[in-house]
Image 1 (tube, rainbow, N blue to C red):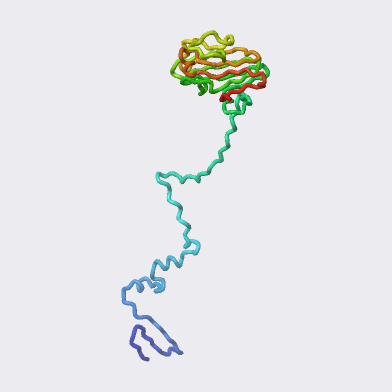
Image 2: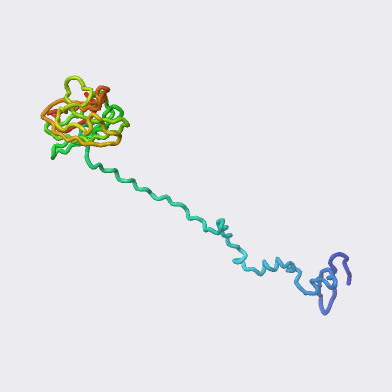
Length: 239
């Protein structure tokens, strides 16, 4: 028997045959390994835990998303809702076919041969025109229904007078019966309305002017023409 000095000791001997025994360095008395008799290969508790854990359990699932502040659930993704285009508005009456932008002022009922004309008084003008700058053309033997409204702070009125001769200073007898507004010389206040309804002859040229003293002379008038060749009424700049 012989001994090799170092970390390990090897003892060779024959006990009924050849036997080789390898033993680690002697464990100090009272150590943990001696008292528990555990295998040195699994002395680390962490290693033992991993070794005993199934593979499926070792793979951890993805961590859930943190809750929103205040405990509220995350909002669902916003989805745009297609908006339907609104249908185009339908006018109650179609304007006459004069072809110009001023057709909004006049409409025509062919069955009753009635011309409806909107007459708006502004600051010393009618429908934005002064001094005969616009003309209302109507077919012969029709009935004109003119709705007057004063949009100016100054009182105004309307009256149909002759298209010949000088313009009078104030309202007098109308050239066509009933072709004038209420308070023709005094004038109607702002936002006041009135309606003139009168028949026209077979032909003729007239003026629609403001009967308040001095207003017509200041240019507050437009033309009214009864044209035998006109099949429908029209309103627009004087040609």
